[in-house]
Image (cartoon, rainbow, N blue to C red; front, side, top):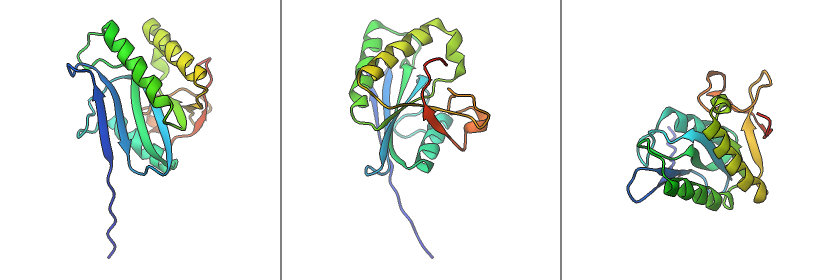
Length: 168
């Protein structure tokens, strides 16, 4: 009989009122690559609770030899109301995390294309990423389409990361 053991350290960064979730950081092997995954909206995951999206992100990054993930969102609000302070806090958090990762994975999904505010926010974040010369990737499906969210059915269990194409 063989027993294996592992710990996943989780940190979550909120604003002082706990109304905005800026960052979920999960570390299971600090000696492996580190990723920043950017999605659209703050989900239900926290320092204990896992949601499906976070679970698929961890599972797929682990298969791709990553050991740390930092998850941020275009929109950090947990309770709906976005403020100028929450936007600034979110962008500041993203800027700080970029310096500590090997790769940035844009995983906002195809739905943002029709959301003017989401496109605007993504463009703001892309400008920061390009300024910091980040290695920007995206998830590609076997049939060649790119720019998916981790919950896309065909990609839940196997990611293929390719360079990000700004013309989503």
